[in-house]
Length: 127
Length: 187
Image 1 (cartoon, one colour):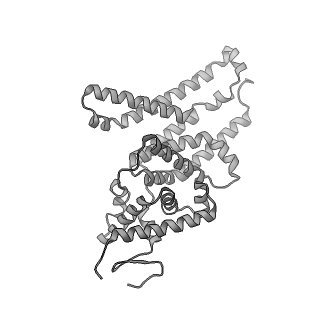
Image 2: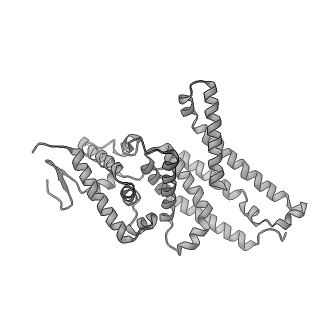
Image 3: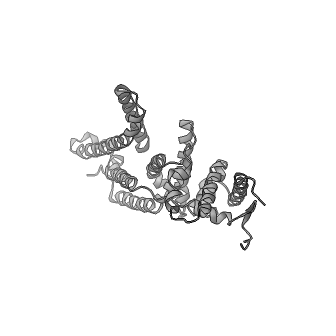
């Protein structure tokens, strides 16, 4: 074996250049398709939920009932997207919960705890 | 209706959303790879990736303004880095699944004919997991994400020179770890 200046030797074995080994060991990891679909759905919802309408809304406009329809619709869309995200995430963990639960009551308790945890995380992420 | 945003604000919002969409498409794999090698399993890597982009979306406007046209990948990876740190702190845990068992190395290398070569790569990954956090992260950014010194420096909040030293030391330490795991061999 011809020795490359960057190669290193351990015992009788010669290893290839560490940098090229690292390049092969740390290959980029493709994200799962489900993650892409979920993320794009979530981000799309955030964009579409008319955050700009709510942000641009001036308090004075609230005095006029004719202006109530758009922010109410925007809030409803935003809430639906957040609830959807919480349910999807909680649903994903169901196999783990079933495996860990001792009985039906324990399973219910774990499900409620997961729902609360995911709701908190979504709220942190969105607001 | 005068109460709503003027057209220029809407155009700016549309421009930002479009730019964010491009950023997401360009770097989803980077964020996922970083998250995966950081936490060691796909389930948590998915969560971390999702949180990273949600947080990036919230602060994208400011990041763009402050970037002065520089690439935003280091900023994105820094968000993932901070979230990963919180992830461990909140749960008081470290990655428990060795990366090579979680699937990163097994799929691309199943066709490798040489078992010895595969063992070398597993040993390298095992060694990377034993490195101190900052050295491990620098190697992940360099080799899994292909970031250059300047990008890594921005992501880690260090100078270019300090980053160069960090990478050099990480590789030297990794070589030592691999030598030790190799154990005594016949002459």
